Structure formats: C-alpha cells, structure tokens
Amino acid sequence: MTQIERSALVMHSAEQMFDLVNDVEKYPQFLPGCRNAEILHSDEHTLEARLDLSRAGIRQSFVTRNRLQRPTSMELELVDGPFSEFAGHWEFKPLGEDACKVQFSLSFAIRNRLVAAAVGKLFSELANQMVGAMSARADEVYGKSL
Image 1 (cartoon, rainbow, N blue to C red):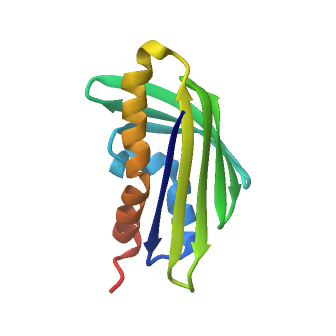
Image 2: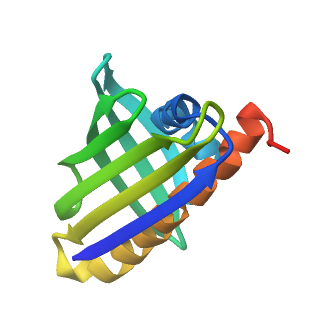
C-alpha cells in the first residue's frame, strides 16, 4: 500500500483553503495530470465527484465521496475506481484569522497488479503535488500575502 502525507503552512484562512479544495470542478485548471472533474452529487455534508487523470499516455478515472466538515476537514472514500484500498483526509487547522496549516494524507492500493505500476506512479505523483498545487492556487485566487 502506498501512503502519502503532505502539509503546508499557508497565509490563507482555513475557510478559504477548505473552499478551494472543495471546488473540485476547477482542478483541471491547475492540478497537473487532472484532465476532467465532474460533480456527481453535492450537498452541505457530501461531495461526490469523478476525476479523470492522464499523464504519459496513461488514463484513469475514479469517483470519490467526500464527507465535509466545513471548514476543518474532509474524509475521502472510494466509490468507483481501480483501487482495492483507498482512504484520504484533508485537515485545515486555523493559525489566526488569515493563516492555517493544511494537511493531506492518502493511502491506496491498486486492485490490478498489471496496471498497478503505471497507475500507481500516476496517482502518487498527483497526490504528492496536491498540497503544493492547492497552495499556489490559493495565492492566485485570494492573492499572495506579504
């Protein structure tokens, strides 16, 4: 099983970062390897979405259900995709009014061993870039702090 943990201190509020991470439809605009994002269901406590990933000729889609605890956390669970195991978590810890610590953790295993190496590499690269991409996107959307 692959496990990834990343964190960053950002000069944006927990609410801003939560909203940015929850804006899944915009992922293709700034997240490397994300070609399409489609919201399948959304309400106050749940977001279900399909992401289409593509890199180096490898394409893969998956659907997650995100349990939302605005503005502090999100739990990600697999609905459909190539994974035999999948668990993700975003956490947004306020550090004053205009700063927070963003933490992202993800663990996954690929069901099919024949595609595990290629798809696992693609997904690992994307997951490893998530926090950095979100931080850079926050600076674009909300403005860079001095």
